[in-house]
Image 1 (cartoon, rainbow, N blue to C red):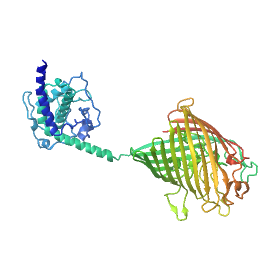
Image 2: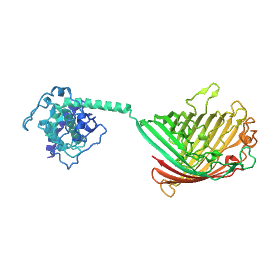
Image 3: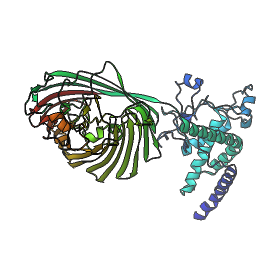
Image 4: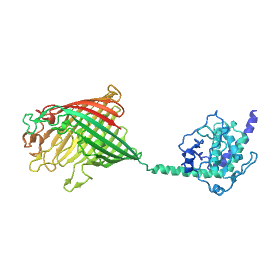
Amino acid sequence: MKNSNQKSDRPNRQILTGLILGWGLQGLFSLPALAQPSLPESPAAIENQAEPAPTAITEIAVDAPETILPENQQLVDRNIPASDPSLPESPATIENLGETVAEESAEQVTSVAQLSDVKPTDWAFGALQSLVERYGCIAGYPDGTFRGNRALTRYEFAAGVNACLDKIRELIGTGNENLIKREDLLTVQRLQEEFAADIAVLRGRTDLIEARTTELQANQFSPTVKLSGFTVVGIQGRSPNGADRAPRDGKRDTKDPGTNVNTINLNQLYFTAQFSPRSNLLIGLFNQNGSTSPQLTEDVNLAYNFGETSGATLSDLNYRFLVGDKLAVFAGTAGVNMISGLRGPNRAESAASGPISAFAQRNPILNTGFGLGGAGIDWQFAKRASLQAVYSTNIPGFFVSSNGPSGHNTLGLQLTLTPADPVDITVYYVNDYSPNGNLISFTGDSQLTAVNPSTSKSASLQTNAVGASLNWRVSSRVALGGWAGYTNSRIPGKSGSVATTNYMVFVNFPDLFGEGNLGGIYIGQPPKIVSSNLPTGNNIPDFLDTGLGRKGGQPGTTTHVEVFYRWQVSDNISVTPGVMVIFQPDHSRNSDPITVGVLRTSFSF
């Protein structure tokens, strides 16, 4: 019996070898079976959506899901997929469109090469259907039918022949050739001979479709615009207080005029147009009603207080794109500055959902200049290290006049390190030119040169600043962090300099009393002039004391203490009560402490 089986296998192997050699000479082994869902629909196909396209045919080369009927389902009364109107006809088919093929009896053998379509009554149709039933080489329709009474194009039929040959090759390759009947091999051989030309045409069309698809994917331009934003409604008030202001003579003779409880409504909209997965255009609009003004000191500035607007104001207009996989580039005329370009390590930083004060958001050095337009990069040069650089200006364009910079210009560089998973460190350097001696840090000593009484102007300043920030996630519920900063400024062409320092330490409590909530305690010193030896008349501390502007630093030290708790009501709504106390505002020893109470409600979308 063993020898008999071996002899009977030889003709099968010879036939299969002939099929493989013949097919291989035509380069057809690489021909994928046609996946109908991947083809573009023609109007006719759209009109015929009541007849869904077949899910797939085995050995699909395109990214379409493959559907194979379970083995226990029979293919009786099912058909090979119907004619696809989205496939163009071949020249041979077009020439024979006028021919009418009469329905033949089951006994009649029709010459398939002379037909424009393959009918269920053709011998080839029955032969292929027999192979399908035995080897499951073609999938059915999604509703589990095979529709055995429908015709199909020669190209669809050729794809089916190819699929069945691949299935037989698979059985041979896995050592299951004894499952293949000799008559099936003869059938496949005849089908291959009848449809060799059609399969060659089909292969060419498939290659063309793949080439066109690749070209479209590489050059697609389908921008998608997404709308996002937030609204902040803040209720805040300050305790009555008096300040010892110029001249500072030890008397609290200036009363704070803005201590009444008021409301601030801030609205921010973002339109993000994504031109590709690697680039987007950001357009931002905001408006604000209400403010903390009038106020005696910038130390009371809140995170969501940017100043009242008469209508919608452009906050962002910039374009961002990737160069390779490690480098991001951004540029624009609005919203490009160190705040947006230098990533901070404190993950709680946010005007809508983070600390309540402006000072507690980030190191004030990173507010310097508060530029409008500019350009920058973000380079991930190592797994745990990246470099950011931003150049910005608060005037249109990036111009420099013949007599020096014509506006406030700022260059910021930052190195971001993650030495361990829970630790983030940033080290930064800032070079800034201010035409009026104001660093625009929004808190503490921001104005560093005094107003000249004869010109009513302040001298310009060239500033170099350095700083570092740290955030350490001690656990999933506790994060410690802080920062320190130092600035050194000089008047171009003059002797002397003015120096400031600032620091902050904080602890955040993520998910405090519930998922999504956040508690925070922040203690720090806003920027303080620790020394100023500019030419007489320009030094702020003595100017405030005597009006003379002689050398010297600030006599007092401001201490900022802040506590807040953010309750995450839902994914899009949060409520944050908070209190901050400012001791010795404006570094003035004899000024009253100021207590600020806030109830901030934020809506995001």
